[in-house]
Length: 167
Image (cartoon, rainbow, N blue to C red; front, side, top):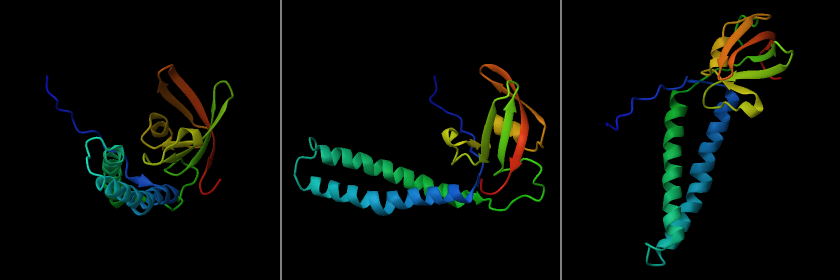
């Protein structure tokens, strides 16, 4: 059996201004704050001699690799992202960045904001534009019916509100 893994499909390259700020803040925290502290800890631990049983050295080196890997990813990703900070001309239609209210057949309401794959957080109502729900929503208008396949079966929602901008 081969170890070949086909390349994963890359996520969309759109991001909101708030999402870009969060990624840049994470990059700054890792590169300017956390990495110098870990580097100093590894340097001090290396002075103690035998590195094979030195926990500070071993775990410090591991943390440095994690930080460097994440920093490389963030630098590459931030270079290719497109910040979408303008409201579309047709605000009656669902596009990237829209805040959408949905109602299911039982009358339960859900509120989502459609964002890029680098900033989605379901607990905070941020839905990745690459998700099945967001793909079903994009291009729809007020009072349109949305059908989404879920593990529990097909779900039907109705668009009750579309907003752009803050809250």
